[in-house]
Image (cartoon, rainbow, N blue to C red):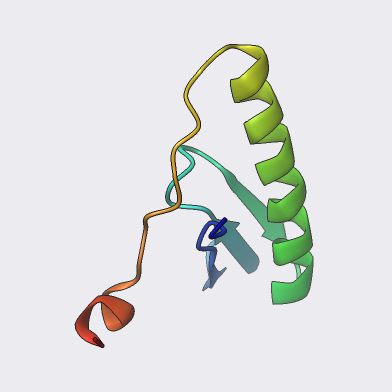
Amino acid sequence: MKDYHINIFYSEEDKGYIADIPDLEACSAFGETPEEALRQVEIAKKAWLEAARAAGRPIPKPKYKPVIYQAAK
């Protein structure tokens, strides 16, 4: 199975890195480094998927692609 795309960017306002998974609504995490943000969003992803399964909600398939990858074919 293809995995979910993760965006990581620096937030000047938060003085740290934000990682988010566009295919999973409101699934994001903070870290002082990009690596920490990635570790934290992996934990958030696991919790998000477990909560959705427990609630009987559908799990979206990975489909998000950054524009740079959409143009390259």
